[in-house]
Structure formats: C-alpha cells, structure tokens
Amino acid sequence: MLSIVVPTYCEADNIPLLAERLHGVLTSRGIQYELLISDDNSPDDTRDVVARLAVNFPIRLLQPESRDKDLSLSVIDGIKAATNDLVVVMDADLSHPPEVVALMLEQLREDDEVFVVGSRYVPGGSFDRDWSLFRFLNSHIATLITKPLVSCQDPMSGFFALCRSRIGDYERLNPIGYKIGLELMVRGNFSRVVEVPIRFQDREIGESKLNLGQQLKFLRHLRRLYTARFGTVGEFLSYGLVGASGFIVDLFFYYLFQLMGAPHQVARALSFWPAVSWNWLFNRITTFGERKRRSHGRQWLEFVLTSLFGFSINWGVYYLLTTHVAFFDEYRLAALVTGVGVASVFNFVMSSLYVYNEKRQ
Ligand SMILES: Nc1nc2c(ncn2[C@@H]2O[C@H](COP(=O)(O)OP(=O)(O)O)[C@@H](O)[C@H]2O)c(=O)[nH]1
Ligand SMILES: [Mg+2]
Image 1 (cartoon, rainbow, N blue to C red):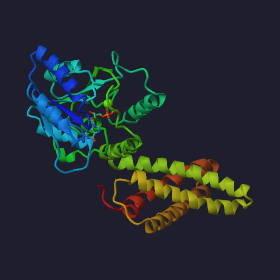
Image 2: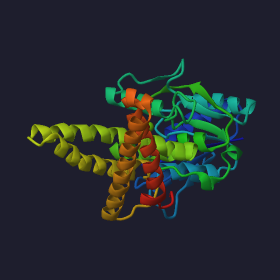
Image 3: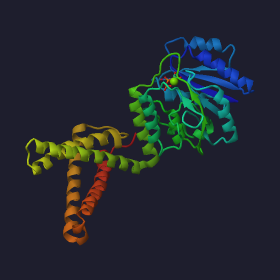
Image 4: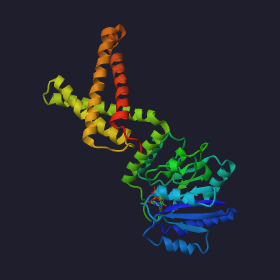
C-alpha cells in the first residue's frame, strides 16, 4: 500500500485530473493507494471537489485548523497523516508525471533506506524548453550550492518518495519556505538519494506560487542546513566570506576618500568604519542569522570594539614577527597573512561567544 501526499493551494481545477490519472496508472498495475490532499484552506471549492471525488477514489482532504499557510508544513502534515509507510509527495499541477510514481515505488521496494527523487536533470529527464533563462540559472545555481549537503542533481524537486520510518524525529525538521524535499534529504536517515528521470511539464491551470520572497527564504533555509550539517566550521566559513567582502568595502572607501582629497593615513582610518559596519550587518543577517536578534546599536558597538581589538592583534602579530623573525622579515606577506589568520580566529570566537551570543533558534 502506498500513500500519496499532495500539498495544494487553490488547485480545485487540477485535483480531479490528477486523481484520475493516478488512479488509472496505479490500478492498472495493481497498486493500492490513498491520495491525501493536504490543503491550506484554499478559498476555492477544493473541499467540495474532494468530497465529490471521494465517491469514486480513495481520496482524503486534510486542512489545518490553525497555522499560517505553509507548503513545507502541509507536506509534513500529510506524511504524518498517511496510513502507510511508503509515501510519495508530488505537486497537484500535473507537472510531475503520475506514471513515474510506480517506478519510484519499485525503487523503495528494492531498498527502503533510499530517498527517491523525481529528477529533471539526470539522463532521460527534461523540463519544458520555454523556461526563462532566469528560472534555468536559478535552478542550476541553487543545485550547485546544495552540493556539499546532498549528492543529488535535482535537490529542489518537489516530487519524491520515501519510507516514512526513515525520517526519524519530526521535531528535528525545521524547514523555512518551499524546499521540504531538501530538508528531508539532509536531515532524514537515508542511505543515499536515488534519482528517477522525469519529464517535467509546466502547469497549464493556475499559476506558480514561487516568488522572490520564497527565494530569500531558500537562502535562509540553506544557511540553516549548513549550520546543522557543519556546525561551527560552517559559521567560520561564512564569517570568513563576510570578512572577505568587507575587505573589498574597506579598499573601496580607502581609495574613495583619497580621491576626495584625504591623506592616505586618514583614508585608512576612515575606511575602517563602513567596512566594519558592513561586516557587522552581514554577520548579523547571515553567519549568526539563526541566533536571536538583539538591539542594533549596542551590538554594533561591541562588534566594533572586538574588531579594533582584533586589528591590534593583527597588527601586533605582524610587528612582532617582522621584527623578531628573519624569515618573516624577508617574506612580509607571510607575516601579514599570519596576522590576519590569528585575528580572524580571535574575532570569530569573540563574535560567537560575545557579540552574537544568543542561542541558535
Ligand atoms: N498546502 C500548501 N500547498 C501549496 C502552497 N503553495 C503552493 N502549494 C502547492 O505546492 C505545489 C507546488 O506549487 P507551485 O505553485 O506549482 O510551485 P512551482 O511548481 O515551483 O511553480 C502545488 O501543488 C501547489 O498547489 C501552500 O502555501 N500550502
Ligand atoms: Mg508547479
């Protein structure tokens, strides 16, 4: 037996088409199933449509009593409510071919520890050619930045199958936004990801709910997964990247102030401020973004103080090494790099324990 979970929002026109096609495919192969429509209280006639279909098909409607509209939570609700251990999740808009469900099920029957993904990007898979360049790039870049987290060509796919007991503790799941498949792949106890090629078809009825807000949520989701997977190392890398971008800001203002006529020592002293503020803000949003927020002013001041202290360490290391060690006097760049390295570790530890010291959410 199989449970098929379909999250929906305003898909009253698509649900009957999906129900019929699934029924045809599955009954012809002798597969028993239930179809769970996990709907976020759509303001269309989804409720009546499902009630009518329930006369002929094994279909059930789930609607949350109280919570905000949320695709990922709807999928989790559906999986929890399923009566079977084998679960397939797919969209209502017929962009995921129902025929592939049977193939996915076969994979799970062979090995119930795997996570099966309906993939557009493996040989045999495809997507509609009229995808905009933006959508295409977007999808590829997103796939690239998930590489360290999962080995999957199409981790953004909303079409997947799994054995429910492999999810483990639902409390550990903490998705933001749309990518519940990625969340499950990363946090579940799956041995590996198996990809089944699909021919992805753009929806014909209704419109996509993917917008810029969702994209930003995706970035926050990724950061959360990276922190979960790589812990402090992930934070340190992010801190380093922010620092590198701050260095560019620093250089930019260093030259700008000189162009405006400031002497180079003054320019050096002034450019520190925009750079350090940039670093503070971006670390607040990115590196330590999972930690609870607190007042801007005080945190900025603390960040500046630790950075100044860090800068003295940076400079002190450089000074000591170049005056006392012949090697470093000969290779001054090595002294500079060592100074930056020691100070970065110091700054990071101070930031982590002190400036952004609130617990991760
Ligand atoms: N329950 C629920 N379903 C949603 C929500 N947003 C989208 N969906 C459903 O999730 C599936 C994928 O959404 P869609 O708009 O097609 O996204 P796209 O395929 O990425 O363009 C569809 O079945 C939608 O009806 C939501 O907030 N709650
Ligand atoms: Mg869609």
